[in-house]
Structures are given as structure tokens and as C-alpha cells.
Length: 425
Image (cartoon, rainbow, N blue to C red; front, side, top):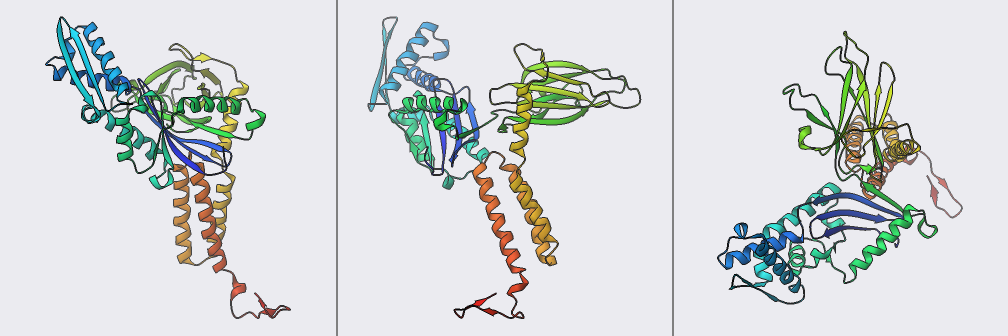
């Protein structure tokens, strides 16, 4: 909540899932740059790895044990894992069918037993940081959240693996609750924090199925809203019918970015009608609009008739048909504002103006600058801080070029002397 720039990685590790976010805080903006996660990685996986090690040490096969004994081993291993947060050694001792089973765990044993899980945690962090566009020198810290992040073996592994500080707070659960309160206040435009802005991103891609000419029975997945898009967002794509004379089109909505539609999560479908046209293909616009409350609207506008369909993803396999709403208009308006940048447009116009006033060598340089700046800005759509920095850098370059073109500085022009004997150019 202070005025300093801060960029950090949130490592939220619970019993069953891992979520990693890269968050950028500056001025009055809290910007989520990128997220990554593993919905099948959590503290229970460490319990299972410890249970399998316990069985190995006692000559047992975990997979063929009866369910009650498996559960007993898992509970005992979980207790040992928790003990290792405050002590160096923990013993698992069980009696089953009048036979004693024992195993000693310490941090080294736990590290070797769960090394593949620790590597998986590292990979999730790497994916989020890679998508964010930040480097280690630009990240202030990684902050540990969640019960499973309290394991010393995990903390030591991350401290050794990362080139940024790993922070753990005793009262992190309380800080998370306070953060939730702040977020609710921001959403409600509370007077004390009404000027704070929080941007969120889409954690997954939203796609539609399209015809596969090479293999008609295996539909392709075409992404409209890419993962990590700033929310709210609205994206449009123009499609056409597969066959001439076709009168109906199936709009299928998916979550995910796998190559084939069936490999993504199916969200729902709807049908739109197009006029029968035996001479040409009918075309239509498909529009996805997604807000920060996880509401996805799907629109289809048939070009030849201008018939406008509006659906909403809801429960079930069928998209819900709805009327135009204020919320949908708001998503489009905010999305347009997010993806339009007057500073960028003005800077590109300035490059084009200077281009006409300089020599051929400088023109070549400006052409490359224009291309690279445009391309880089597109990759930084989520990274507000870096966008500002890049705009400032290019502005300074243009200032230098303009100064070098200033004919007033040439020595062929006379210099006026001011009252104190200094010369004015």
C-alpha cells in the first residue's frame, strides 16, 4: 500500500493444488501479470510419497494394501510431515495385524522421497515467471502462502533453486484474510481505497471448435481469448460455414488451448441459423466477452442478415440465450480501453512523422524501431510497468534524434549574447 514499486511471485500451496501468480504493484495499481498452476499437486502428494517410502522400508506394496491400512499410513505420514516443520526427526510407527511397522523421516529422507514433486513446484513457478516477462533482477521476492508451503524441505529447496528471496511470514493466514478484505473494499469502491486499481487475467484460454480439412472427424480448437489476457476482455473472429447451402452452424465453446477441441474442457454449445446460399459460403462474426466475475458471453452476428445472437455460458451443455445487457456493453467498453493506448498511438505517429524528416540511414533505424516497439508492446499487454518503461525509452530515443536534426545548433548561425555574456542558441 506504499508508493514503492514492487513485483513479487505468490506461491499458494495447499493440500491439493498449487497456484502461482506474478503480481506487480506500483503507484495505485495492483496488476496480476501471469498465473500458472497444477490442480493435481499439493500436500497430499507429499503424504502419498512418504507412505510409499514407508511401505518400501517395511517390505510392503502400498498399491495392494487394504484401504483402511492405506488410510492409516497416510494419516501417520501427514502427522510426521507436520512434525518435521518444528523438529528435525519424525517417526511413523504402526501396528497392523499384530505386526509392527516403523520408519524414521528427516529432511534429507523427505527431500529424496519427494524430489520429483519439488521439481514440479519449480516448473510451475518457471512457467508463471516466463509468461510474466519479468527477469529475476526485476522480482523482489517469492512469498509463501498455504499450509503445505510451511514444509521446511520445500522452503529450503526453493531458497536454493531461486535467485530471489523466499519470504515466509508467521501470520500469513491473517495477511491473506486482510488482503481479501482489501480486495472486497476495492470491488465495492470503498472511500479509503477507491483509487486503488486491481487488474486480473484470464487463467486459461477460451476457444471454439473449427472444421479440420485434413481430418474432418477431428475438430480443431481455435482460441479467441488467449490465456493471461487482461480482464475484462472482448475478442472477435470472423468465420464461415463449412459447406455451401448450409443453414445451421454449431457454436461450441471450450476452455483450453489443446490443438484438438475434444482435448479441451467443453463449456456448452448453441446453434445459429444462416440463410441457404448455394453459390457462396455464409460468414459471421463470433465474439467472446469475458469479465472479472467469470461470466462468459458468446455472440454471433450473421453478415448477410445482421441477425444477432447472444448467449451466456451457464450450467449444462447448452448455452443460455440472453438479451443484450449493460454488463456485456461494459465488458466491451473496458476491453476497448485496455487494448487502446493513446500513448502508444501517439508515439507511433511521432516515429512516422520524424521518418519523413531524416536521412536514409536513420529511416532504416526508425523502421526497425517501429516494428520492434509494436511487436514488444503486444507481448507486454499484461505488464503495465514494462509498457510504461518501454514508452519512456523510445520517447528518449526520439528526443535524441530530433535534437540531432535541430538546425538551430549549426555553427553557421550567429549566436545572441545575453546580458551576462552567455550565448543563446
